[in-house]
Image (tube, rainbow, N blue to C red; front, side, top):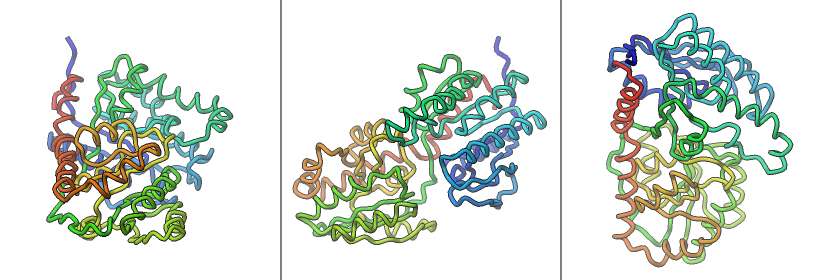
Length: 391
């Protein structure tokens, strides 16, 4: 008979607290504390986005000092992750929580926490696969060939040690399907990202002489700016277009310059934290871009969660879950470079107000059925029962 574990103290480990807190850690903490479980959040003291040390206001967080780095793909970043993973192991061995919920990458945590689990087999260990390294890193074919050996070692850190866990949580079904062949023992489940429902009175655009498009989120080298511009240029032939941009990133000036060169009006709002202000901007937009380069291995995006929450139809080129959701719920249009003319006609010629409002309703339905907190909590309940935990 399997011995059940009564939780008293849980560790939530993430190297990226300021990114993971609003979409995952917040709800994990709330869920566990509702079960009278003490929660300690363990994270690095280095802000990956801003590349600087920081100290969050949350008093429940245990910060680990790690070396700084300036480039995302660098030896210094790898060293920083190794230090973080080793220090996490030491803290776990010292405090001995009943549950460890570790959000990965870094891949080095698979090895270090495996050692913790082997020394304390009754402790429950759950890994969340937030990203797949190195598979999701957008490198050219030649670069991948050159870096084949170090990338193989990097990938094998996950492959070799992941089976020590009691359960694996995947951010999307694309990751779950990819990992299933290498996972033999742990229970594996997809639990989508989540966000509080702060939607108020979102008014959909009623004017169709101008089509307003939204891009929200990081404007980085993962974004297919060429495709975004090509779509806007096609729509611009028959209608005025505007691109509303919320966010920032190293490719922002490139996107703005490309819009200017093609005589597309681009309105830049910067990073908007205030939800009511964000709603005002989003309510101006007919469609929202969920666009990334073809070689990016991603199933769902944080930006699409925000789009669905506000009920904005998406223009999507991301495969896996995003493509399936868009087709199943009819909450927007899946695009690729072969069907651009077809999508252009669907938007500019065949879309009446009734059809458009149905797209908006369908987009909102995606949030309610897949991404709202209640769905997240129910999924956690199911998972913990599967791994024989008393909560």
